[in-house]
Length: 87
Image (cartoon, rainbow, N blue to C red; front, side, top):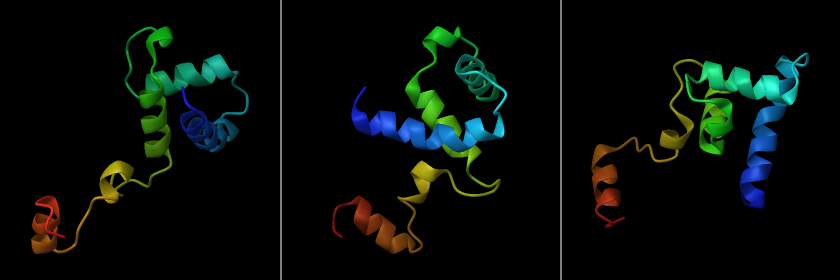
């Protein structure tokens, strides 16, 4: 795992852990696993699942998914031209 990914997880997990101060790290990961609907053993929990769940936890209900929001275009024509590489 590279430094960027480690820093991203640490930044995202801090507010989540502060809401659940009484939990140990393993208990916190188990809670993340359960909340995200991950039904495999915790040893198979990937950093992608952790990052995605933590990002969604910090998003208000009804807000756009963080990974999609960056690609959103207000103008349909501009979106088509951008997708074709013309903009």
